[in-house]
Length: 242
Image (cartoon, rainbow, N blue to C red):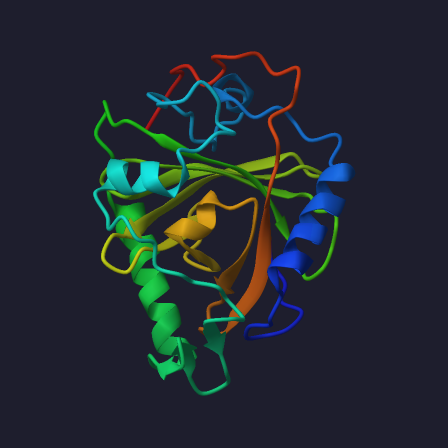
């Protein structure tokens, strides 16, 4: 997955995001049913095991994540384009400069790399964060899907699928528990780096940042996909590697 129609952040209010999510889901047909068995046929996939929910589509909400990961009960907001604004020479959070875009991107790279370098324990428990379409701009369709989960140590695992090409790759990353920034990459690639606040990943529609190799951020959105009505319960049973 690649491409960047613009650099930096742009404002999209809650109403705009909700409308985009509703329009997207109304036409979201033809997506695979994501469960452990569905990934068994793909050699590059992460095979979910020890998932604490019967479905990869569910998540515990922020309060559940806070308890499970041992982070602050109050979420830190990363509303890209609103309280987090990227300009050509600086990144601002709540109006305060926190460094250049390249410095901010390097932080995301380090967070993702920490999870990539860490091998989770074999008996690690996984909290599903959900299944999301990765959407460009104000689009209401996408071939790109993220399935994400996190363990109590803050390690992120999951799968990326391009539905059109049927390409599946493992997602690796982590959550920085102090800042509540989550960041991850696809397969063996070091870039692009995808980042979001931990609380963002409990929402139905949320902006995220995508950092390229030059440290230039590009804003996209995640839209949560609903569990297919005919998907059997208990489909996230153990079936493979960590």
